Length: 286
Ligand code: ADP
Image 1 (cartoon, helix red, strand yellow):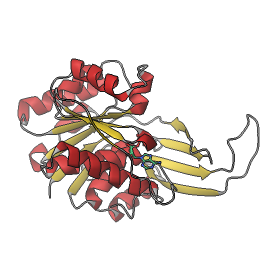
Image 2: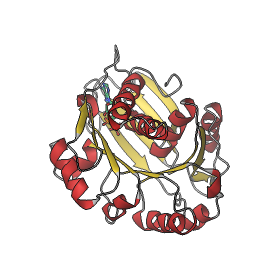
Image 3: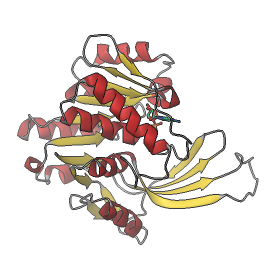
Image 4: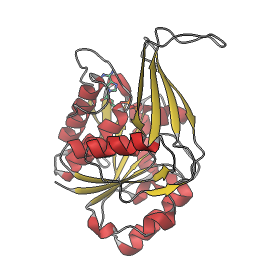
């Protein structure tokens, strides 16, 4: 099993299940509330740890009481938070409304500074076999990638691109695996996965590209060959799709680290993500 570092943010998620999406100014009661740790790279770290890898998470933890919830969750899943730095502020917080239509409406607040390039450069990166980044601040990310190129040029890298951000696409070709999906495609005006993947390939000849496409399945683009597709693996009952993409990403990293062919990696990652949708949180994955 591999030693993996995941770099991103850890959030406090307040997940409300509601019986309808509220009207503006409505006062309504939620059917359930779950207070939990979230964050894309943080979720991916937890799933990778559950898949048996030795995983560490690097991010900023707020010097606040609520941070205990996040740290406890990481500990329960065996994710090492030693690479984190602690700074004043509140944990980034997401209010997530899960409506019967399957929609996930998220209101996010953050005032905490981001994990910086100087924080990253202080880590003992020789201790890892793989580094996974959440595609956040492109300037900081570029600096981290420069640091890796100078000091650990052979370390394999994955990058999650969930939302387009100015300057992010210029970094795609600097990683081994690019993890993206339907939300990113739609934000760029692409409705069709094949055309989206080919447009990415024109920008970035190097990485293996994977794209989650929600309940319709997932795609991969190994090289210049035709894209590969897998249907989704629906669980008996969809109960929680929060973090499906992060679980898919962990499944992809796991498959690539195991040396599986791209089609198997794609299928197994989608199957893992499907299983996750059938359960609340990540405890039972895989
Ligand atoms: P995100 O959570 O980032 O929005 P997606 O919704 O694209 O990501 O989900 C990632 C992967 O999870 C999909 O490619 C699919 O394999 C799986 N998945 C998502 N929603 C479902 C669902 N309702 N049923 C089964 N699998 C799903």
